[in-house]
Amino acid sequence: MIFAALFFFLLSSCSVGGESLVSSQTVPPQPGAEADMVMRGISLTEVVSGGDRLSLHAERAYYYEGEKLLFFEGVAGNFGQGERAVHFTLPEGVYDREKGQILAFQRVTVSSRRGIQLQGVGGAFDLNARKVYVERNILLTSDSLRLEGETGEMDIPSGVVKMRKVKGVISSLEGVSNDVKGREK
Image (cartoon, rainbow, N blue to C red; front, side, top):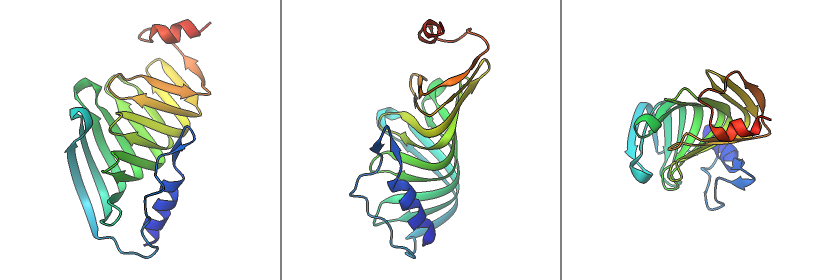
């Protein structure tokens, strides 16, 4: 299936900080290979690392038993616990349950319950480390903040976001941590 071959190509080129998110042991589906299972309108809920809950709904999903990978389209979901949980949307991605990773290749949008929204292109959810990595064209917004950056990551339990090559506008320092306030000079 062309869909699977395209996703493996994108999956194999996905990296964070120069480190590939996919091991060389991952075997791609053969071009034209039929999925072992094709699903529409699926919902998945799991308890993963640290008791965090992952729930997602996908418009369509393709499961390849040999690779143990779930390719999906049109995903909206939640990850985390209580007030620290985040909501995310992805047009397309891959869920590698064995590695505890969700890889995204197009637009990634992650929203926290504290009003922070992180957007970018390409990246990964490391469910075991409880982090979200975004590879490029980062936009971080809140009521008083608009920052653009090259790459970034969000620690889900703490809500801390780290970005590289940042430019932007802070319209108010209310609610901004002392760490950021100290760097404004």
